[in-house]
Image 1 (spheres, rainbow, N blue to C red):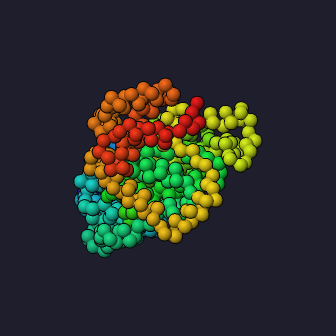
Image 2 (image 1 turned 180 degrees about the vertical axis):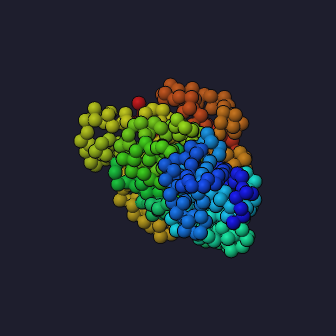
Image 3 (image 1 turned 90 degrees about the vertical axis):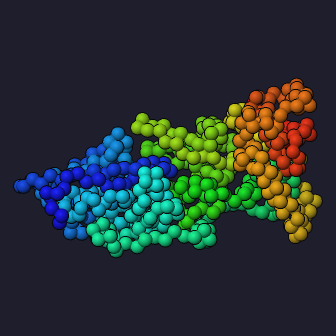
Length: 522
């Protein structure tokens, strides 16, 4: 022991996971020896129930590893005091702070290192979620070293510039703190190794475009959506390929860039779904229509991420859209505008990333066969009205592309089958999308057309006299909102990009209007 006379206040760095981010926490420990007094442990700093319950676990782990706590008063404080702390990841810094305060090591030996891990009663260090977020928090604070369990270390090392050491149990980590040896330094994987380790971020149901029979209009809408980042709504009877088209969109999107891979990895790591390296694929999420508000948007106490965050930088597919609860759908409006969602609670407000590509699908009526060329609809007008009013006008207004799909005929099915053998169709579409996307990114510094603000639209889609005449004619037949007018301009810019045109002409605006069918309009 280093001697209690030399010990005053000990500080050890840890983190508390909040959403997909990590807050730096300073664990302050102080031991006051008192003879003829049973050891008392006081824990302060707004710990949650998980941390409060760790006291007996910590004491058992310390005793198991010959880190005896003498008679006296052990005070552990989590700073900053006004920030609520949560999670089991603070076990390791709490134990090390207690051991140093009791004289088992010099407090100076803990400087410059962030510790992260859950402790078992035998002192074994267990992995915790959020290794990547912890590495980011350490880097922001100027801390250059992290010590944690091997599985967590494999996540943290994905962020360059951080030294990561892996330890299996408390005794091994204490030995390293005292002697600076005995822990394995985790090697940063090379880019090719990280890609090889990457696993799909979620189970996908996507299919190749060539495997979808017919539906030329749907495929064209997919190309427009994939190029410009536009929200897409398919309506049509059941069994015509709406879900297959939605799944194919993920294959048409560009591979995620480095910043997007970091974002996807951060989300999955914080939720305990680390992909095994830096994420290499965009996520595809298709929640069931019975999903709750908290399940889709996020919520709870403490706040947790929902499906829209799991779909960050990927595709969110909502099938059977009118079957979702209306309040759940209405909560999508703000994330669609901002690319994030704010979950406010009494203690704090947490912001989750939610920049997703929305694809929706619905039947035209409850039975699904309204307008079908062969099957008869059995729904009354009032049933159809009640079904369609479940989707509000403001939400529908945010969907740039609305396409009504018809059942493919036998000739289309046979023709698609032969095209699948020669495979020219999907390669042609994918080539056009890549070229159009490249032009768009060069022109707008990486901003997609769906994200163009008013100034961007005025620069890249100016309202020439011909365009103003077009919108004046449209106003006579369509009740377009200001958002709807801007949406037409954005889609027209994408259509011009797909055709290799520098300027947006009236024909592009007309085609954009055709891709905005008045489905479910109130």
